[in-house]
Length: 244
Image (cartoon, rainbow, N blue to C red):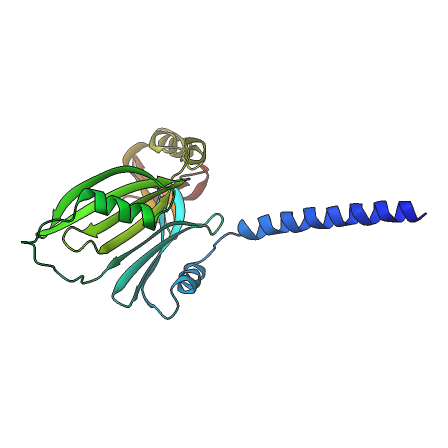
């Protein structure tokens, strides 16, 4: 009897652990449904910052929320994926950095590379270029670590880090899930709603955070407007009017 109880207890513990793991995954996959949620998430990262902008947008077909903050002379940018609330891009830059004497000799590329590798430990250096922005010598360093691409910008004279950015790279399989039906397919769907009509205008637009194809057609005295969900191909609106 005691042995049976022990087995039940062990199974119960294993089930609890599995449940907690699944629960944790569910929390991570929670959708972000509003710009207000994005604003709150960004402010947790940079408390007491001034909110400059919050907006819903699309990045390579992915619905995202973008937040811009300002604090302590730095401008911060956050990009959250709406489908799971995950931060997929983060960057900051110094608003008005000091301007060292440009007559000074540039810091060596080796020193800058060392700084970058210290900032992003265990990253792979991809390339580094020396550029001039409004007369300022700047080293732009590109690195990769895991599924993130990093860009670091250093002042060429002082070696001060002026900008820092990382962005999650999207795999081909993941990006293919974000592809829309395409303009030609949208036109075909629209023509089925008004057989024989001529398309006079067709464009991809953003309607309250949803990518849509807006198509205008004419047939005789009739004018048609069709709004199609770019991702699913579903007809969202269909209007008919008489041209007078």
